[in-house]
Length: 113
Length: 112
Image (cartoon, rainbow over all chains, first blue to last red):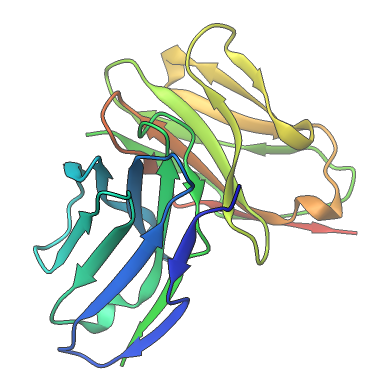
C-alpha cells in the first residue's frame, strides 16, 4: 500500500500571502489529521476530518482552515501568513481516526519570509 | 483538554546504555497512550501503544513502556540502546476524542 503523501514538500512564501497544502491518505483511510511541528512547541494538533466532516479543531486562529474531499484527500489553507507560521506541517491518516494508529506523511516544510 | 509533558528534551548516551524517557499527562478520564518515533529523514511512526489491560506494553525494536495510572505516567524504556535508536521520541495521549495531544519530544542521540 502506498503511504501518506503530502504536496508540496517545500514552500517559501512571504508574509501576507496564503498557502494551500495537500494530503492524500492511505487508500481506505477515512480520517485525516493535521499537525504543526516546530522545534519549540513539538507537534500541535490543528484539526481532524472524517468523511468530509471536521470533528475536532485545535487551538489555532481562524486563518488556519481545512477541508476533506469525498475521496478522503484533504487540504489545509493558511491565509495572511505570518513569520510564526513557518513550520513543518504533518498530516496523518487512519481508518477511523484517533485513537486508531496514525500513519504520518513526510510533511510540508513551510518557510515564511 | 489533555496535555503531555516530556522531560529531558535532549538525551545523549552510549551504545549498550539503558534508556528511560519520562512522559506525564494530564487528563482525568480514560486515556489511550502512545509513543511515536521519528528517525532521521523518516516519517513519524508508531513505536507502541496502550489502550487497556497489561500496563506493561512492548513495542518494536525492543522498546517497552509502563502505564502507571496513579502517577499519570507512561514512561518508555529500552534496556540496551543501539546507534540506530538515534531519533526523536514523542509521547501522545488520546482522551477518547478525535485528536492526539503530543509532548514536545525527546531528542535521543546514541554514540557508537
